[in-house]
Length: 407
Image (tube, rainbow, N blue to C red):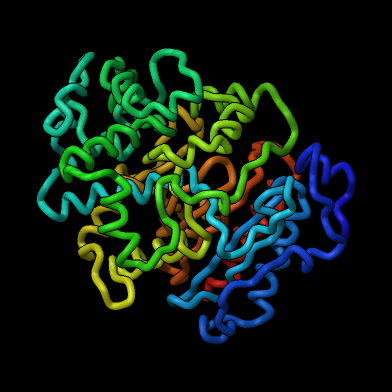
């Protein structure tokens, strides 16, 4: 089925023609038979139909989806384009920016230091970064940063998005910032990550990517899974959807930049040389699913223990008894020290997922695990648009995944 011209225009003003049959732009990874994951072939096909319906909504040039059940990869596919201009396809081997889902990986590096006895989440940040105590922030702890309660959801002065390429300057700004609503939950889109990354580097004496490589990437056999540094094979992001002033106002409030500005920065070659702990880890969908499967395994991958089971349990402990209204995202959410958590009703990870945990990334990146369903997954998309025809299809895909893997 060909996409209607109106929908295709949402992808890009200059676009590679979209084939009539989506099979022409579909690539498959290594998948097990449905029965090996205790699923039916019709169930897996229902998930893929829902994925194709999401693509036909016209809001993403490329989609990567990898799902595991009981540790078995039963779906690992790329659909669409990694680069619209060249027509390069997005395959299961294409690294995609996880944006804010990077926070969960950075958080686990902090939890690794806790496990090693090198830091304590309830220590003040100033124990590791003395300069952070300015403007009354001396009582801020690592836990405050991880649970979005440090009072620095965004810089307290206007900044250009290009500042992301000057991390030392960002850290100086955050150290000098005056906190607002300290202790209240207000999602820290980018800010807390820089402070946490600096703490990891101060304690280990190595770069954040070196710690990531040593603790997670090499033991798990990842090809990518780095902050930046993937090269030209990465997927490029595209602004899509219906332009609305309200969307840019919200994004300015949440992340400090308009949709166009954020996408421009992420496609800049300098973004590959930057380390943005809360925003630029690149991975394939399979690698992201692999990481969450390791957490679902209690910190073990292929018989090798990366984290103690109690470390994973502590990382997933809810920060509050029930979801709290988030002052940045303007909706009720429950966080742990590094993860977004599901709930019994409709949640970020679909319906009836009270024990699910994971993280969303810039608008349409989902990385998560659900212990009740023995499920780990990653949905990576390259289209960046908040309002558009994809929303019902996205909800339908979440519902289908949860329905098919429920038993």
